[in-house]
Image 1 (tube, rainbow, N blue to C red):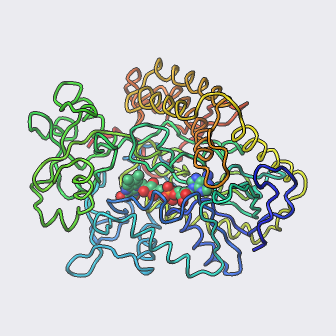
Image 2 (image 1 turned 90 degrees about the vertical axis):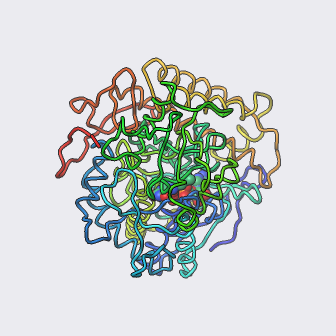
Image 3 (image 1 turned 135 degrees about the vertical axis):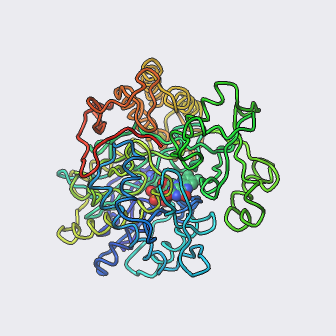
Length: 585
Ligand SMILES: Cc1cc2nc3c(=O)[nH]c(=O)nc-3n(C[C@H](O)[C@H](O)[C@H](O)COP(=O)(O)OP(=O)(O)OC[C@H]3O[C@@H](n4cnc5c(N)ncnc54)[C@H](O)[C@@H]3O)c2cc1C
């Protein structure tokens, strides 16, 4: 690996004498990124692979996943059942060829993870335990207590350490993708420890930067989930697909947004209203608490609107009751949930029900890719929550996301390896060097050194409130139009905003400003895609267009960046074997 000799140090502009380079550069060290690195390393041990991540890999959001990962592993289950549940869950917006590939790879990925050392929970006969999950017709969610994300990420991380050809740039923040002659040739990135910007060149780049939940105020997502990779790809010319499809999870703690895992309902927990009723009998009589997230979140909102919720200092809520499961089951299978409820809500779920309300959790949409992670820009791949293959359509089923990270992380890593083996290493001559210099000017002159103007926190807060209020669970024409105007205004104000901290070492305010700049682009694609989808489907609920409209909208929204603003086009949904039908549970 060449020494770091970035010429961008401390804002002193000058040509980059030498830049860093690798055969494959993976941006993001979460489940998808680590799996991609392993796949590439296994495909060809001679390839030089690097993972750059703005956090240490074990701090990626994957670590916080609780409930489990789906894979059809039992004799009563089948690939077709898993595929159909996923497609029905998606309200028929998923691409069925992608779903068929996904479900067929899930069991293999689960076995691989087990062989690499993931400590899954076991049945007495030694098989990996499975639990029920929302929208799944049978028990197929593999779990490790209620800390699957921690154990999965640890297993993947330690597996990457076995490969000497995987290098890491921990706490490096990618700011742009370098594109030369239409090919992705690397990124510009800030080493957060020094504040220096470098270009890291690569024959192939894999984006695996996770979701964008922080665009919303009330979310389960960690602070790092700011849609960076979506904005990077969008700015490089890749369309963002189905961005209006944002998942709201029904059980968040009302004050913090901390998730009370769906495993609680999978194990038999109840949702109850002020009258002590299991209210889902009115909305999901066949599934009750094991219904899909979109319908349960809306049911909670209806209960609250009709006066059957509770009022609290952090808004209205309903109750999640797991007392009847008993202390043993709670301690064994939901110990993390118990700890979180005690610490953050002051409630011991063995003895009291937990207050919960719906909030942002996941985004079904993302960077448009095919089954190999290919984005349409030669050399650029994407996988994980950031990407939209699409298997999740208008509503993801819980526990499909972690396996999605594994299946499509592996596919993207392998495809990037095959591509890199055919390419020669890009050089930092013109025009790449010019592009990198422009990026340096943007970051250091326009953002870091900008004088006057407002602080970024007020812009971020207004964006989040706008998204919560107008692009939340319920949407309509008026609110969405207002949201698009508001985001345009915030983008204008952002150009004039300034950061107070001018230091280079771990300047988290500068990083936050760059993240906010990404989030505004992503938020705008969500608002526009939602405005033009004049129907209700899955998580996208229009109060002015309440029905699903297959004649007009059985198609993917594709947001292209056009003069800085989204232009929405549409592309067909791939139907293989399952014709759309009414989605009733
Ligand atoms: C609380 C919670 C519980 C969940 N539980 C489950 C569950 O039980 N089952 C399930 O299937 N799904 C679950 N999910 C969803 C699932 O965990 C995520 O969708 C999935 O882990 C995303 O993985 P990822 O690899 O795509 O991204 P992440 O794990 O978010 O990783 C993103 C990586 O990208 C890096 N990065 C981002 N931007 C940049 C940048 N500009 N430069 C450099 N690096 C960057 C970050 O540092 C990080 O390493 C849960 C999600 C949450 C929030």
